[in-house]
Image (cartoon, rainbow, N blue to C red; front, top):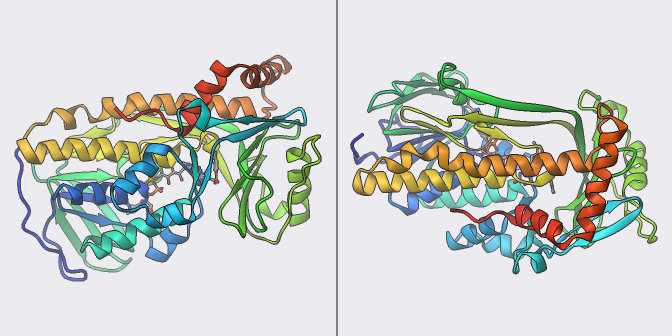
Length: 409
Ligand code: RFL
Ligand code: PHB
């Protein structure tokens, strides 16, 4: 591999010749990568299938690890987050109608839980990247990869569903196109190992116009199933309940949702949940998934394109940022000195962190959900795990340091 310097300057709507790094997908992975590369003087172009309005309006993650907050601030992207996010010192675990506060800040030397919605992060990253003169092509379709094994890969695409076929020449392709995108499939099956676990439950998530009911997140293990209370703003709250992933949202009237939330979340302290109008609801399935390796030739995949975690550990967005931080460092070293060591080791470096996050997300998920397929013995073991956790500083510290984010190497 030899570094090349692209001289291309992109003006939207004119034909595109080339760039240094073609990024597919404007989710957290793609947008953070484009920002990180730009700060190192490396050019990129983002090709995004959906419209700007769609990506800025999709409701997903809520919790940022401390180092992601620090990274955003260090990159000058944190002003709105620091004004509008909610900073909690810990979380509450609730089971057997009792509540237990896990003081993450105290257990981890000051690291906090930051609740700032993923679509707000997306809004901040898109506007700042466009202000910097970056190129994000929204609404592209038919993305295909060519010559990933060679020195000059190309990405073929159309603008909109009917635009002419265009080709973007580049040095590298970053596949940041989420779990259903095409980039992972471009790694030959002969070399691609996939590890997967599908859970027999999903989450029904709502957004409600109500004031916060509690100063921090509540994760509840209840005999009727898991429930989670989170927040978005002083006016909007985010709540989830464990449901059958195949259930139809039409079966869930607002009254039924509130009734389940009350039953699963309330404890013996007299605390009650504040209701409000529900303005968004949906059901998501849950899986754990890892693709190894995360690279093929000059293609590097990152974020949900390479791995999925169930949301109970709040790790997905944070892992996506960790991947692209590793990738941006490897690309920077390559363009500065021609060394390919970082690029060659990209997959192995990322997978060490990914498997730890997979373990933690699986642990939180199995401990907090009711799984009808498990034996009564296994179910009792999960309750014993919770009981042990809230009595052991060592166990709480282990949970806290994983939740607020393991250090980046
Ligand atoms: P994304 O966000 O899916 O972005 C991929 C982008 O690629 C585009 N795309 C294509 N573009 C061009 N051509 C194609 N052929 C394309 N195919 C796809 C898509 O339109 C999209 O814009 O992946 P990325 O960047 O890897 O980011 C991953 C995170 O979005 C995800 O892990 C988190 O949302 C997971 N997650 C959580 N993560 C956390 O860190 N903390 C949390 O609290 C948290 N809570 C959650 C979550 C995910 C949830 N859902 C809905 C799955 C809560 C929920 C309910
Ligand atoms: C959210 O606020 O959407 C959220 C919070 C914590 C999680 C998952 C999602 O573990």
